[in-house]
Amino acid sequence: MSSIGLLHSPGRSGLSLVALGLPVLLFVIISLISPSFLSVQNLSNVNAQITALLIIALGQMIVAISGGIDLSVGSVLSLTSTLLVSVDPTLSIPTVLLVGVCVGLVNGVGVAIFTVHPLVMTLASMTFLQGLALLILPVPGGSIPGFLEALVDFSFLGLPAAFYWCLTFVLLAAFLLRATKFGMRLFAVGANAQNAARNGVNVTFYKILSYVLCSTSAVMAGMYLSARVASADATMGASFALESVTAVALGGVQLAGGVGSVPGVIAGTITLGLMTNGMNLIGVSPFVRASATGVLLLIAISLQPRKAIGA
Image (cartoon, rainbow, N blue to C red; front, side, top):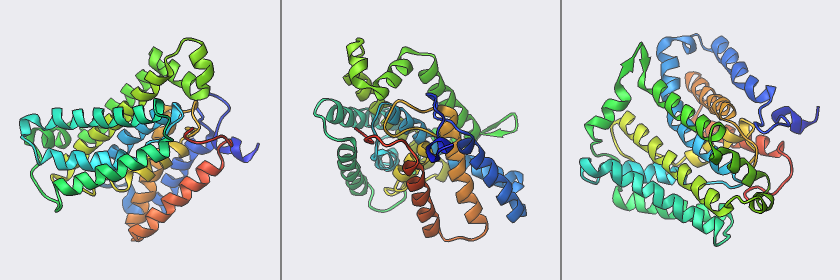
C-alpha cells in the first residue's frame, strides 16, 4: 500500500485504518503512561476540551469537501466571544449568528464570485476579524449570559452537556452530508466543479453556503467555549484555524475537495484532543503541543494526493 493509501481510502469518505486507529493507539499509550488519564473526571475534561474543536472542524470539513479552506474560523470564534459580553444579553445570540452568516457570505462571495483564492480570502478575513475583536474587548473579561452558561453546565442521564453538544452537531453534519441534496451536490462540486455545473448544479451557491455554514459553526463553538470558561477573550480562538485544518486532514478529508466524512473528523479531533490531554498530564510545554500540531498537519497534507489545495 502506498503512503497516500495509509491515510486515505479510495472511497468518498477518505477514511482509512490509520485515521481510525491513531486515536485508539494514543488512548492506549497515554493510559499506560499516566494512570490518572482513565479517571472519569479526566475523560470528562477531554470531552469538554474537544467540543469546540469538533464543532469548528465539522464546519471546516464542509468547506474542505467543496474544495476550499477557511482560516478565519478562529477569529470568528474570538469575535463571538467578545460580542457575547458587549451587547444586550437578549440580543447577543441573534447578533453573533448574524455576524457568522455575514462573515461566511463575504468569504464565500470572495471565493466563488470574485475568484479570490480561499487561503488569501480567509486570511484577510482572519486578520480583520481578529483586530475587530481586540478593538471591542482589549482585556479579557465580561459576563456571559446566564442562560448560555446553563446550556454548557447541565448533565443528563449521567452525561455532561459537552457530550450532547458534540452529539447534536455530529448528527446535524451527518444528516447534511448523507441525507440531503446539499451533501450530494457538495461532494460533486468538490470533486469536479466544472462537471457539476454541466449537470445543473449551482456551484457558486453551494460554495458560498459551505462558507456560511463553516462560519456559523465557529460562532456556535465560540458560544460554547465562552460559556464554558464564563468569560470572554479576544484571543480565545487563536489556535483553532490550525487545529481545525489538522483535525480534518488527519480524518481523511482531502483539502483538494470531494472527499471527507463525519467519522473521519471525529477521529481527527479525538486524536488532537488526546495528544493535548496526554501532554498536559505529563507536563509538556504548550509550545511543544503547538509544534506537534503543526508537524501532524504537515504529515497529513504531505500524504494527500497531489492536487491544488483550496483551488
